[in-house]
Every structure is written in structure tokens, then in C-alpha cells.
Length: 307
Length: 177
Image (cartoon, rainbow over all chains, first blue to last red; front, side, top):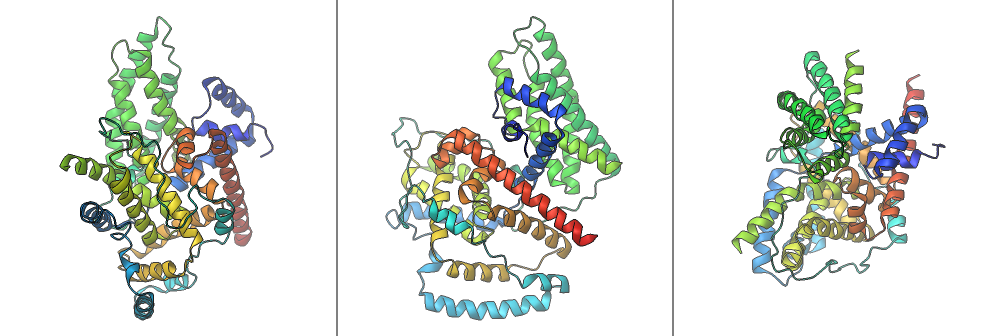
């Protein structure tokens, strides 16, 4: 990590560089193996972190919403009373009851689990002590323990209508109620993988071409016509592959195809002579979602797996 | 009122799972506590700020409050929550497919373990970027820091994780050979 460009690689994959800087870094990447490796590693880390599935059964979510809506109407002054229900009991009674339950349940658990899991059960995951010193060294904006939350920009607005924002973690929307998210079994056929790898390559080429369309050029309309046609062709394949990936439980590929689909749709639905803003908005979305980089990494990974 | 509740419900359905995931990663995998704090953040939003926040601000407000609640939790003694988490963990139904469950847990634990090695501010910035796909400007808005600090924090977090990851791979390789 000695190359002076490494820090810019981080900004590049986040889509936070200006077009000129991005071009400069991409040019550099062609000649610097160290930075290319850093980019692949950063994208790999992104995949690991973004594919983390929360332990959230559907019933917990429903119960939480009920509590909030009812708590908001009936107990407006009792801060947190509706939430921290468990700890309003006497701690002694809770501790005694918990110890009894833990003993009983752990005993049952050991009895039920296969031997490999029993071996893993003994060291419980304990948060690393490095967290506390850092959080103590750097206090939060509101240091008091029972703080009131900070309410930024408390300006009353005449029409407090809220715009539904894009879902950041789409994979959660597909988790059915009462089902713990589990690692999907990868049982996709070699044909489907080949098709997906090819599809990713085509989509990547399309998005790169779309990124380079110059709207001030008199031939821009013709260029966009080509991108639109290509996007229309790719949409159907994208839908088919996404359904296939969903069915075979390949969450990572399904999620990438899911992110790609609205972008393909937007490009396919562009008017004959799109204005600069419309194109810019789509480009910004492509940049923010890092679709091009993800397509590249995944098509390479699929191709390698097939070799 | 009904339409306001509908809007709130829509926001809740959209962001409660993400907020739980963010908090679970921030708190080192304590899922029940994460759910509790996510619920508390939404409750505070519903009670105090829902009518006054400008459109589109609620999401950032939620992450800011959730992070502050998590920091408060770091300061408190962890014992009772650990005990409670262990009880909940033990009461979970047995896995339908033990192998899948094992793999998922392995992967989750690895991600959590690596994230816990980062300072809290770097970890928060990285999670908001990688999981919530917020821009540097939006992350700065949530954490009340400058964009350049966000950029540096995210880069440092990535560099540190990358180094630890490669060290881990080397150790695993040495163990195999």
C-alpha cells in the first residue's frame, strides 16, 4: 500500500471522485498492479460487509411497529417505557430467572446440536475490548446516558409529506416472516453461471458506453438510441437470470441483478432526445451503486469458477 | 393521523431491518440489543421529531440517534445485556439445515470480528457506506463530521481490514501447509 494512489482507489469505488480524477485513477490502474489488487480487495470487503444478514425474524419487526404506534398514542411522556419492557423488572428476579433458563436451555441445546456445533458453542462471541476505549476517547455529540436525541433542522415545514426513499438493503425485503436468514445453497447450473457471466460483461460494456456518451455532441441522440436498444435487450435476460438466481438461492448474484434492473429500465425508457439532467441522474445512480465495478468483479469471479 | 401513521409504517418497513443490521454490526453481533435500540430510535422519531423533520431527513436522523444510543450502550456495563442475549440465543429454534446455519454463522462472525477491530468512528462510517450506500456528504451529515474526515475514515478502515484479512489468509495458509 505504498502507492500514492491507493487512497484514491477507495474514493473511486465509492464514486466520490470528479470525472477527471476518476479517469486519471482508472488510467493509473491499468499500469499499477498494486492498486488494481487494492481495488479488488476493497470490493471484496464490500461484498462481505454488504451481504451481512441481520438476525431479524419477521415477527420481531411487526411487534416493534405495533409497540411504537400504540406507545406513541397512549404514553407520550414516558420515554422509552414501551421499549425497555424487559428491564423494568427487578434485576435480581431477572437474573435468577435467567440463570435458571440458561442452565435449562443450554443443557437442552447441547443435547440437540450435532457434535461440531457443540464444540463451537463454548467460546461465545464477546465484543472486542478495543471498542470501549475508542468510544470513550471520542465522546458522542450528546454525552449524557439518558440523552434526548439530537433533532437536526427543527424547522416546522408547512407540508411534512415524506418521500419514500430507496431501499438500501434490498435483500431484507425478501426475507419471509419467522425465517432466520441462512446462507443460500449455491446450486446454480454451469449454463446459468455462464449466461450470468456473459450478461454481466454485456451490461458492464453498456454502462461504460453510457457513461461516455457526450450529450453536447450532435450525434449523441444516435448514441443514446443504441444504448436504449441494448438496454431493452438486456432487461429480459436480467429478469430471467434474477429469477433463476433467486430460485437457486444465490443472494449475491440476485442482489446485483436486482440493482442492475432499474438502471437498465431507466436507460431503455429514455426519450429520443434525453435532456442532460435525466442522463446525469442515471449516471450518478450507476456511480453510487458501483455497478460497473461490481459487474466486473463478479463476471471475472464467475468466469474463473467456470474455468 | 391515519395517513401519517401509514407514512410512518412505510418508513419503518423500509428502514427498520437496515437499522437493525447497522446496529448489530456496530454492537458486535448483539442482535436482540440491536433490535431494541432500533425500536427505541423509531419510537423517539415517532414521538418527538416525526412532525417537524423535513422530507427525506428522517433516515439520517434515525441513523444518528441509533448511533448515539449504541455509544451509550458501549459505556454501560454489558453484563445484563450479554446475559439477556445469551438467553435469547439459547432459546432460538434449532437450525433447519445445520450445515447452512453453521456456514452463515461462520461468515457473520468473521465479518463482525473484523469490524470490531476498527475504532468506532471508522466502523460507523464504513457501515453507512457499504451497507446503507450513503454518500460521503450524507455520512458527514449523520456523524456531524466533514466529508474529508469521512473519506479518510473509510479509507483507513478499508486499509486496516484489508491488512488483517491478508494476515489471516497467510496464517490459514501456513496452517494448511
